[in-house]
Image (cartoon, rainbow, N blue to C red; front, side, top):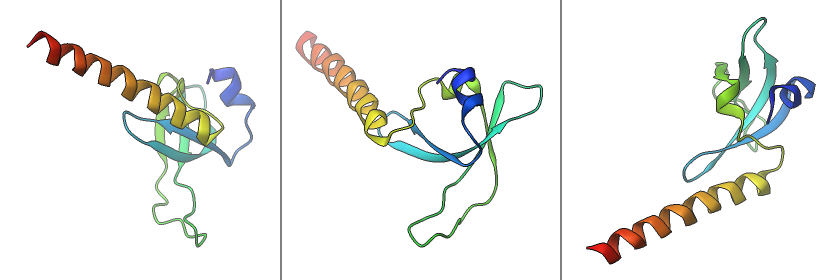
Length: 95
């Protein structure tokens, strides 16, 4: 997401951040004043309890791959895993 897209989201919006093999779910609290960092918090679990209330600060560059839908985030993870699988297969063939 671009900084303009992130700035347009209201506080408390759920965003999904794909990693190498999973999707992290975060609540976006907003931009840190006069910085390119955003405050994120852990979302509540199924019982509505927030087990970790410490905020996390991520740079806008770390959030470029963030999405607003979980399905889209999982597709990004799958694409990355497919690229990795192809790379490993090429390595195996050359050995």
